[in-house]
Image (cartoon, rainbow, N blue to C red; front, side, top):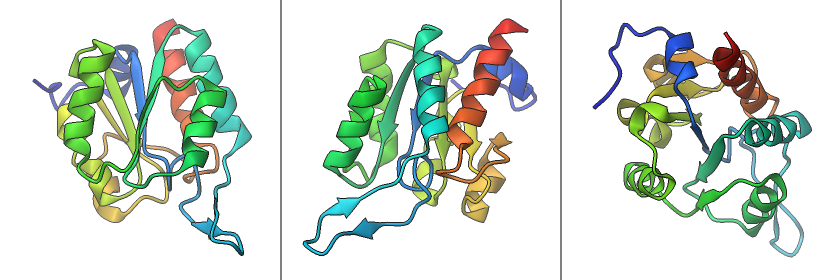
Length: 169
């Protein structure tokens, strides 16, 4: 079951209990960094991290579904208290279904923020579909909300502020 297409973003946002994020291009700027010995490096924005901490303090949960796998993502998720981390999942709808079951929420209570075409596969199955400002054009067209901030530059914090504000309205 999905929300009515006419339901406005604030009404959708007010129902959200679980925020799911892609990693590369959302929590990071999408660029991949590799050290001289092949180690992968990622840059995360501190404001996104603070937003995630605030989201959890407000009593809500979060998760990551990423097509790539990286120990850095596990480390950052642990630092921020992100409860659900699904990595190496190219087929994101099945990961979404597993995550929703594990979290014990209904689809209308889930928001997903993404940047590229694999992310938009989950959009029809959730309550609020969000694209970062610099997302692929197809993702921008499919999203119900687009952040002003680019991926890795505070887009997650922007969304969390909207989600928290919607609950106080």
